[in-house]
Structure formats: structure tokens, C-alpha cells
Amino acid sequence: FSGSVMTMESGDFGSVDVQGSIQFSINYVQKLREFHIFVAQCRDLAAADPKRGRSDYVKSYLVPDKIHLGKKKTSVKKKTLNPTFNEILRYRVSSEYLRTQTLVLSVWHHDTFGRNNFLGEVDTDLSKWDFDHTHMNDLPLRARVEEIHIWVKECKSLPLIRATIDPYVKFVLPDTSRKSRQKTRVLRRTADPVFNHTMVYDGIREMDLAEACVELSVWDRDKLASSLLGGLRLGAGTRSYGSAVDWMDSTPEEVALWARMAASPNEWAEAVLPLRMMSSAK
Image (cartoon, rainbow, N blue to C red; front, side, top):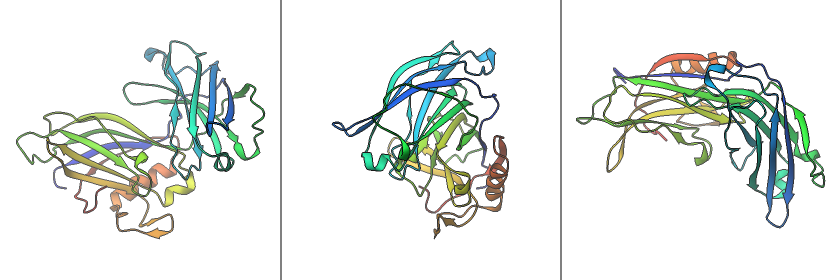
């Protein structure tokens, strides 16, 4: 797409040494058919950049989560390395399905400018869990996470398809549920929008990177409809989890960026990539 570029970074955060613990309990409520996670508190969390203050939260998700229940989050607690939450995260799910899952609780430092810091995580194999045990668990946080972070910084020289445009960026994993679809805010009257927006995909394993594809597309929001301005697809090839699909058409530049990201976990892979027209943008 001549004259248009998208600057983005993709990677996993690992800039803070993990320490501390998390206290939580889990329970399956048969009457409600709900899985409840009571997040009590965290203790002795690692300190991120002290200039930015403290703003921490806990995120939960189930893996492999084939029915796309999604992630849940606590509120953000500020100004403490020992945040107390006392919150319940709920999933409506059958007990049979639950026993095929692993619960992951991860702790994050929230940054309003887009770069959240990973502070540690714990996981619980629910196939082996005694659900009669509803007492509090106090587990040390560990330094591993399997997520993809995509940080869209800005676009330059977007095409003026009308007098002024109001651009935004849409993210999607085309082979997953609508819950994977996210978008940035709309920026008014600019062909050079600065988004500084981070989008996170949870529960993607290293082995999935060979057959996954992330689509980023830029749109102009008008009163009646949105118009596609261009996009790109980050992935490794043309097959999606064993099936040949026509939308996995990454260019060599897009494949190269994905490969650099996969080869360098816990580091940012940065690139400036040209936008192009996509015949079947999601």
C-alpha cells in the first residue's frame, strides 16, 4: 500500500525480576454451574520503574480454553507492593470441561502508556484438583508466561480517501472467536495517528506460533460505515492448525518479523511495515 506504513512491536515482557507470592482459593459452585476464583492478595511483588508508581492487577485464564471463555481481571490496586484484592473472578462452565483445563493466574503492573510489566504467575492443573479443598492457597510467583503482546505505535501517511479521515486499528486472530477481536480508539482528523496501544493474546503456546496468524488492519470511521485503508498479517506460513487457508498470505517482511519475535522470547521485535490491501480483511 504505497506511502502508508504501520510501526509496531511484538514480544513478551520480561523486564522485571519476579518475586513474591499470590494468595487465592478456587471453588466450583454446582448450583450456579460456575467456577469461582477468589483472589485475596499478593505479597512482596517486584518493583517496576519507581518513577511510574504502583498499579497492579491479577489476570486469570484457562488453557487450552477451546470454547474461548476468555480472560478475567481484578481491579487495579495502586501504591503498594502488597495489594489486597478480595475479589471473585467467575467462569460459567461445566465441571467436566473444567477438569480438562489448567488455571493460570498472572500478576501485572498496569501502565497507562501501553507497556504493562509481567510480575509473575502460577498455574493449577484442574484435572488433579480436589474441589472439596476450598482453603486459601499461598503460592510463589514464577517467571514464565505464554502471551503475545502487539504494540501499535503509529501510522504514517494514510491515504486521504475523503477530506479528513478518522483512523483506528483492528486486531484479530481470524481462526478464533469474536472475543479475539480488539481495536484501538478512533483518532479524529489525522493521516498520521499515534496510537501507542498494546493488545495481548493469552494462552498461545510456543508450538502454536508456527500456525497462528495475527491480522492488523487500519480503518477510517465514517458516520455510515468504516472503510479499509490497508493492513498486514503476521504469521509464519499458509496453514492454520493443519488446514490450508487463503487468508494466511503474509509477505516476506511480515513473516520475517514474526520469525524474529518467535526466536527472541522476552524481547521486543520492532519493524516499520508497509500497509497493503487485503481482499478478505476480517
